[in-house]
Every structure is written in structure tokens, then in C-alpha cells.
Image (cartoon, rainbow, N blue to C red; front, side, top):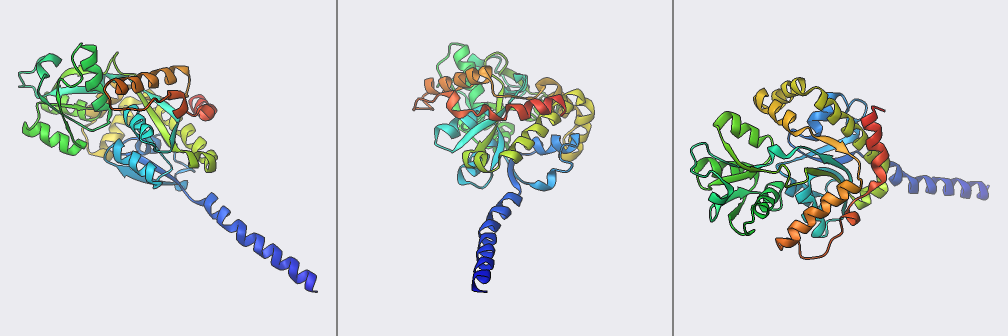
Length: 319
């Protein structure tokens, strides 16, 4: 009898020890997003069906606070541009890229009001340019200055989050705004803004699905499923840009022509981590090193995890 009781207690104890693991496995994947980005395209494409209830979304106004949330362990994964990803990794945030995005960089630009006397990048020497510190807007200014043979401190940066940057730009507190979509298309179509320089040919057009290293170890199946569905959703959006623009504009309260210009100009697609991605990310790192914004030697390959490539390929196949 005592042996039987002891066995029951042993089994009960094993069940109690296993319960936290079961609860962790059932916990939702914590995904960070910027408004109108991954969640919007996955919902519109139907890719959240049967999976959305396994995700806990958190929305951020820009990439920098999303990276901060990754560092704090508040989320498991999130999609960010190559610039904030690089700065986060350089600062010691425990993240790796498990998938990449590529897009045309016509919508990453330095814009000025239509009545501005500024006609070229050289005209911005000594002028104030609003953008986010460590953002892709910051990146395009540095890349444009370098491509034009101008010193990297030729402009005066005013670092602001997008809403504050737009207010400063609209009020004339700054002469230019280095920003991204949908802000560029919105300012062009609704206010007549002019592009002084864009990222085409001078920035690699990368973004990264960043994930905490502990989440990669503990949540691999959910992360693989997420990137598979995100790849399929982006492919659907590119094939259905006008329809998606209508849906997206209703969700975001942004005019459909703005959304359609953005989607057709960007052509955002999810791609696997390959040699081309590694080479372009190293270009980013080297640019920030020359600008003395990154002061430690970083190898791009140390920041990239190619083990989710098959999940991306499956999404692109429609599997």
C-alpha cells in the first residue's frame, strides 16, 4: 500500500513539474508591430485564420520602442527596419534576424514642403532634418550625404518620433523630414511635398523579423509558423495591391491612393536569410561605423539566423 501511495505521489509531483512547461507552450506568441504593418497584411490576406488566437499583439509608434520592448523581454519578436535592428544588436539587445524583408526604397526619402527653396541635398547643409534616432530615416540621410560626397555631419539632426517629426516639419520648425512610408506618399499626395533624395541605390532596402534568442530556443514552431504566414501574406498583398490598398485605407483611415502608391512603389516581400542579405547588412554596419554611431566591430553573420529559411520558402510556395 505504501509503495502504491508513493508511486501516486511521484506521478502527481511529475505532473505538477510538467504543468508550467505545458502552460508556457500554450502561452501566445508575443509579437510587436507598427501600425498598419504585419498584423494588417496578415489579417487582410486571411493568414491569421486558425493562428491569430495564438498571438498577443503589441503596437508601437516606431521601431525604436519596439526594439526596447524586445530588450526588456516584453515581446518575443517584431518586424523592424535594418537600421534599428543594427543599432539594437550593437547595443547588446539579445536578438537575431529570423527572416528579412526587401523593398524598393523610393518611399524612404528626405522630403521638403512644396514651397521650400531647397532643391538638392547640398541645399540642406547646415539645415535641420527631423527623423528618428537610429531609424531608417537616419540611415537614408547618412547614405545620401556619403553618396553626394558631403560630410556626415553636414545637416543638423533633430531626433523625434514620427508624430512629433511630422508636427515639426508641418510647422516649419525643421527644414526637412527624413521618413518612410506611408508618410512619404501621404505628404506627396496630400501636401505636395517634394523628395530631395531617396534610398534607391544607396540603401539596401532591408527589414528584419527580429526575435529574442531565448524565444528562438523556446518558441521555434510558433516563430516558424509566423514567418511562413507573413511571407505568404506579403506575396498576396503584392499580387492584390489595389484591393489591399482599399482594405488597408479603411482600417488605418488613410486615403486609398496613399496606400496604393506605397504598396506599388515598395513591393515589400519576405525573403530568406542568404548571402545577399548578410552582405547588405554588413554594408549597413559599416556605414554606421564610419559615422561613429557603432563603435564596436560587428559581423552581420553573427546577427542572422538562417534556420527559418524553409519556413519562409514554404510561405512563398503557398504551402
